[in-house]
Length: 439
Ligand code: NAD
Image (cartoon, rainbow, N blue to C red):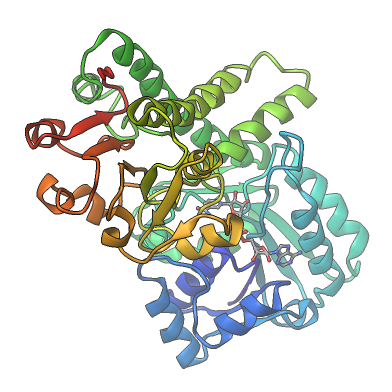
């Protein structure tokens, strides 16, 4: 079976390389020629642990190729996965489906043998059903083109392992023949007893957005409690540990901090609200507005703490540790860390940024911040250090590491990963989110 993957960003490039690893012949397609050029040379244009090795391996064997030609994939592949972006529409909450529609239409126009199109992008409920019509109108009637929805649950930073060994697999199908094709594609995972849910288009689309809405809610839930412990005292980490012992709640995704970001959770909860509203169900998803607001207030909190600790920001040197939206990723889309860095800069601080992998992407968005290539360069002479992305090298920091470098011995741990007692004992003014600020 030959597989094409349409859109070779974080999701698509990972999926393409992993399908090759499973033994399929794969062709990745993107409309960005620079991306295709890099991938064809075996060069991954973003950071994802373990993926460069897979890419190089399968480009070298010839099992994994890349193209910008829909005509080529349309004549070649039996299964076409769509993994193009579904970003938030400018100035609105709804998802921008132009890329998904364009990909489906281009495939329909170019597929010249029986094939299955499989949507992986995260889309509002109802999208797959609307694509059936797009495909029918633009395809050769003598060719049978099936459609299925197979949402993707990979986490950046763990994308390879999540793709090769997923928690569960969901097929949204309309025809048993399409289910059989998907079962053949995922045979390895199914042999390993990965739970499989076979359902209709609508449920498959909703599973993905429901999962993301739940995760976002869990983070904002604990962050809302941070607002209370910041006011009355108490320890948010102990609170999270204590409730997390209840198996019905679980400890994961209960880390209080500067909140969620990235290319998925924020835009997915907004798109879900927008879709519910279109369906006349505004009230059902209204709580997600609160989830979003709690999340954004965490960023305000870090900026206010910095102002309180430094008095006046103008002329003060602030070291920013981390701008990626999460560790082990270079993704800065809707990154809380980058947002806070920019706001401190706009308030007059002299901001020095160090992220092990994301400086380049952040500089592409906000070139005016001062990006440096080491922790030492960021912290030397700093009046305040703000830990915003919990990379391992930051989680392992000790007061002894930073003490000799900084000017001010002030630190905000916006991810709750350091040992407050150790820093305070070493004479630091140490503040974490969820703890009461006492000047
Ligand atoms: P991305 O922006 O990294 O990649 C999207 C790619 O699609 C880009 O390379 C773009 O050039 C390409 N593209 C756009 N229009 C195209 C077209 N008509 N034909 C071919 N290529 C086209 O985005 P991403 O993070 O990979 O996300 C893709 C989708 O997967 C989104 O719906 C996202 O919500 C979903 N998703 C992402 C993740 C993740 O962790 N990144 C996880 C699960 C689901």
